[in-house]
Image 1 (cartoon, one colour):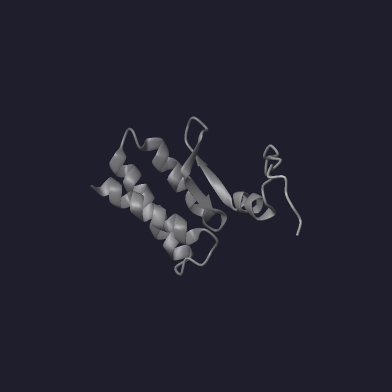
Image 2: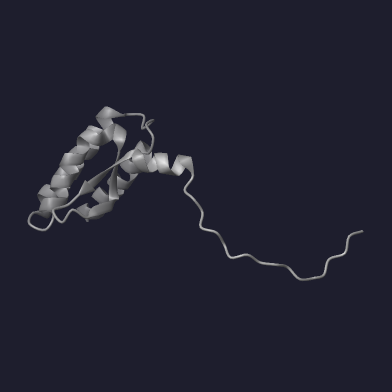
Length: 109
């Protein structure tokens, strides 16, 4: 039986590299930006739904001035996303549509 001295050498954690899948997943999304050019992390549009990104960009830009029109833009974007991918089979589409529905419900109150 091998004996151990009871002491363990600990190394400083090495920074982990992003996996290939994670770096590819980041490329799968289109950033929706507002006027300040700062990405809105909660409104990352899957690349398969890139056509709705301009509608969401407008919603973000007019949110302060006219929240009702911003809501309607987001509602239109959801309807368009659903027409583009009804079964939500695209990568990240189901999660994005779920997020958008929750946001719409929250804004409706």
